[in-house]
Amino acid sequence: MSEKNTLIEIEDLSVSFPGPPGGRRLQAADRVRLSIYPGQTLAVVGESGSGKSVSCLSILQLHPIPPARYDGGRISWRPDDTQAPVDLMTKSERAMRDIRGNQIAMIFQEPMTSLNPVYTIGSQIMEAILLHQDVTRQQAKEIAIRALSDVGIAGPEARLKEYPHQLSGGMRQRVMIAMALACQPKLLLADEPTTALDVTIQAQILELLKHLQHEHDMAILLITHDLGVVAESADVVAVMYAGRVVEYANVHALFERPLHPYTRGLLRSMPVLGANVDRLDTVMDGATVPEDFPAGYTVHAHEITPDPELGYGGPKVRLHEVEPEHWVLCEPDEGGGNPTFPRVGYVRAMTPAGE
Image (cartoon, rainbow, N blue to C red; front, top):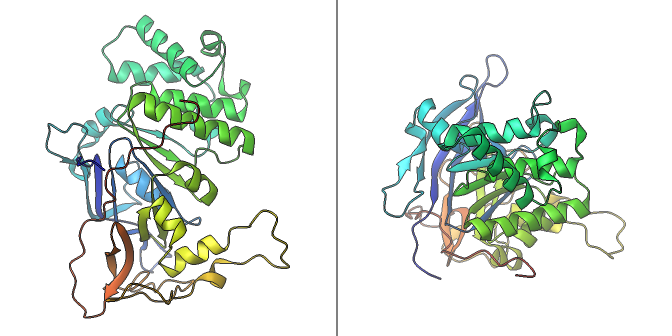
């Protein structure tokens, strides 16, 4: 493990949306803390509504204000080791336009709705290139062709003239990846990039992302609810529930020794191939307080409904490093404790198969 500066640090990010008329605002992200090193893949996992996409979109300030409201937090971005980190939360819309698609790119969840149906594939890819790079239209076209070729699309020059509806789901997802990587970003935000794709195409897309990550020396923040994808693709994992990060660790440590009750329940609810059971377990079936939880800290049993007044886990719980490079949402037994920033030391992403 080498000493490296983090590429991005999300510190105490809180985002809320309007609730029922006359009611409290809904805290979609609640004091979220994450960090990513260059070349790492951080997977953020959790069930639908846990705050994964809200946290991801906040990095690029893509939530419309109103109705969204940024209640606090800091997002420190350091694309270059020679420069001091900048807080993305303080950047203007004009400044963020220079960062979006250039330094930080994003693959959205549903490629059919993310691509504009009335513009050709070529015009949509070239738009980002012309916006962020000082090139002519002919040079932008050549970059777009190369980007489509890099993601494995045959006949890329002909594909530039086609429209999204003429492509299959897997091809549209490859176009989204090509568009995201055309400007060679330092960080790729992938929001469930394999949703609605069959398992064969899913494997191809994940392997493609891994290959391009090494080729471009790029970090990836992978949003997913699929624990199989996490085990296959991630270096570090953050588990979220009700807007909070409940556990944060190296992927091997998290699968071998999950410590938070919610994480244990989530892993137990995974179907096992070949297992003959009458009833599949739910998250609550496995969400018990682990007997071997590290001494000096208290972790409470997982409850399916967070307290709307206090948020999930209450106001005192924070991410604490209960084991080396293994953070859990809990509180010290003595009521004190100074939680450090959650980091899992620099781990180079695994080399794709065949390289």
